[in-house]
Image (cartoon, one colour):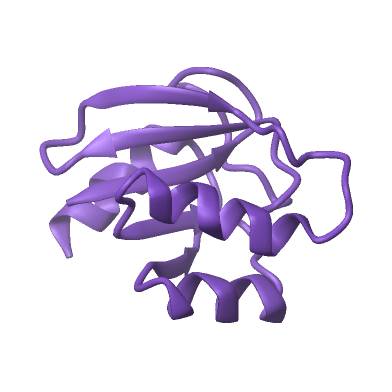
Length: 102
């Protein structure tokens, strides 16, 4: 399992971003909850960010994506690529823990 979280900062003490496709960073965690990669969002400012981010995440083998708000178009793009979207708020580390408990 690989989890990606839209985050405001580069580490797990960050808050979950409410801008899914335009978050400054995506933090990638393994199935044990360890942070394995920090990705600076290259699509933060361009058009069509939701589709581009969905591809970026799929190319990294992400299974689950978390953001505070995920728009309908991005949700569809994620699901087309087999990624399960979840809307959660709060601290990144808490969101990871909650997903792993489910």
